[in-house]
Length: 99
Image (cartoon, rainbow, N blue to C red; front, side, top):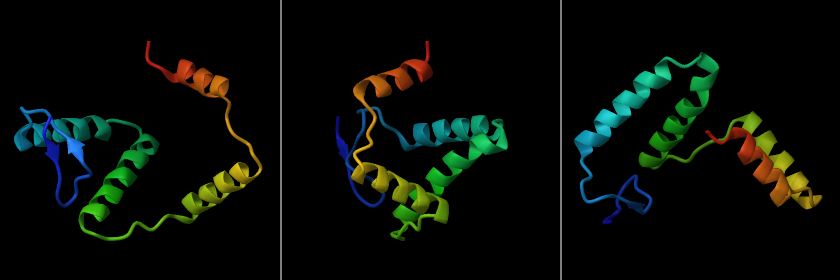
């Protein structure tokens, strides 16, 4: 697969049949589906899109106070040696994996 690079790309491998029109169509279809989701489910994809947009424009991402608090909690847990075991992780994947 050819490697895409340039502004806004992160070493993305693309199949030979890649087409910007196909990407635009897929994105439009995805956005139509997201619009039908409950509002609280729309928040995360919207945040991801805004972060991606900021990165494309060369702006630094500014974490929200809630995100910073979450980062602090994670760093504290790491310092205390509180990590999920392989079994814990497998259980979460088993619970949420599509059948």
